[in-house]
Amino acid sequence: MTTLLYGRPPAVFDPPGDAVQTSPLIPGSTPLESVAEGSVDAVMVYAPPGVLERRYALALALRALKPGGRLDVMAAKDKGGSRLKKELAAFGVEVGESAKAHHRRCVVIRPETLDGLDEAIEAGAPRLVPGLEAWSQPGVFAWDRLDAGTLLLAQVLPPMKGAGIDLGCGYGALATVVLRAPAVTALRLVDLDRRAVEAARKNITDPRASFEWADVRTLEDTGELNFVVSNPPFHDGGAEDKRLGQAFIRKAAGLLKKGGGLWLVANRHLPYEAELNDAFKRVTMVADAGGYKVFEAVK
Ligand SMILES: C[S@@+](CC[C@H](N)C(=O)[O-])C[C@H]1O[C@@H](n2cnc3c(N)ncnc32)[C@H](O)[C@@H]1O
Image 1 (spheres, rainbow, N blue to C red):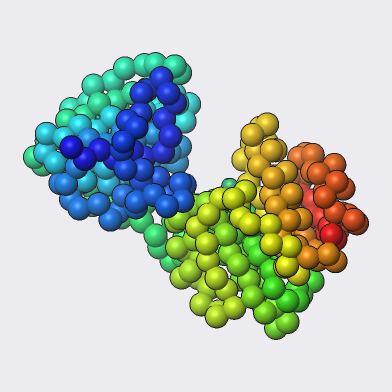
Image 2 (image 1 turned 30 degrees about the vertical axis):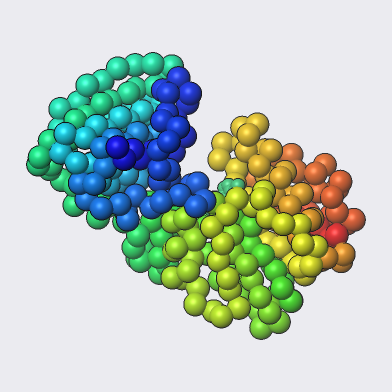
């Protein structure tokens, strides 16, 4: 029996231990896009919050199932859960719904024929975004626009020199600016989101760039880079996000050589100063505008 899992559902939903992971946010997982149509017996999806991204994942999951196979989907009520039943029914399936632990859970047995799969897959697929003139995909951070924090950092960033890294590169907006500097010899682009890394690969063909689908926290502290740029993940500024941003700062220090510099943009309410002052010799706030602050920190 082949079972797929998308994401990490809370333990109360009893996620299968032996399933093949397919989330784009878990490095090394199998892309759902690559699973042969009608080839699996069961899929459990911890549905993502974005509408286009969610319908795309549900359509791919239904496509992967054999007729008679079981789709088990859950989402927090306020993160798409309350819309799940309707969204699934639109694929022409019967949906059993229940509520548990502030989530909605929907179970579907895949019928022979399905409606609207191709449309949902097309609506969530990678594309060249008009106006942005960059490849991106629903679900990627600020997927169809230039983030205001990124823009501020790009505006104040001096030309970098030597070898560097972009921690949490997204579709490559910041890296594109960094690579305009002729003295940059190499730039590693790292992101947890496979879709972002794939988009960045298409957006940046500069031979100085290399791409890694990885969790920044797992990178080796090489202590050999000249510079780090980062617009670290922040979301709504919850405790988890603060810790993630702080981990990015510590990792930046571990990657840099002595005298190397970190250029970081953050939401101005996030408390990064203590972490920066701990890990770096000199910290300067270079800009404070539009709800964001930019720091230069020298190791
Ligand atoms: C605020 S966004 C910035 C994206 C991009 N630099 C830009 O400016 O558009 C943060 C990025 O970090 C990525 N990310 C979140 N957690 C991560 C982790 N643990 N390791 C690597 N990247 C992560 C997200 O997928 C997202 O693309």
